[in-house]
Image 1 (cartoon, one colour):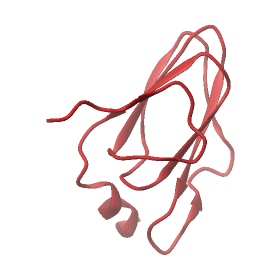
Image 2 (cartoon, one colour):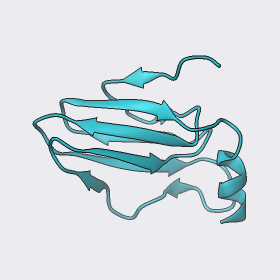
Image 3 (cartoon, rainbow, N blue to C red):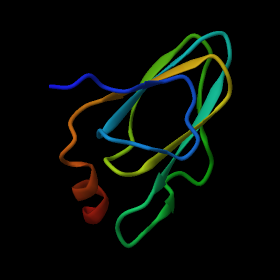
Image 4 (tube, rainbow, N blue to C red):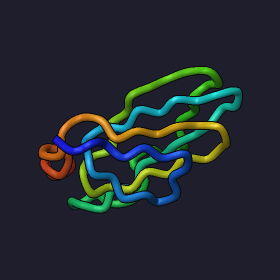
Length: 92
């Protein structure tokens, strides 16, 4: 198994696994997922989701979708599998 990608920023970053782990430092960040497959494309959430400072969350992104993080001092890691992201979008 290859090593997952790790990012310190993401702006419409194409995602290669089902999930992302967002770890924040001393600043709050927000994130949104841009769905690029299926009948309903665009932002998954009507408003960006807040991740508090000094916190860690694992969120669904979906293979091939795009992740955007706004804020500083965060680490974003690809986690999960690479198989079911597109299927979940089509079934939504």
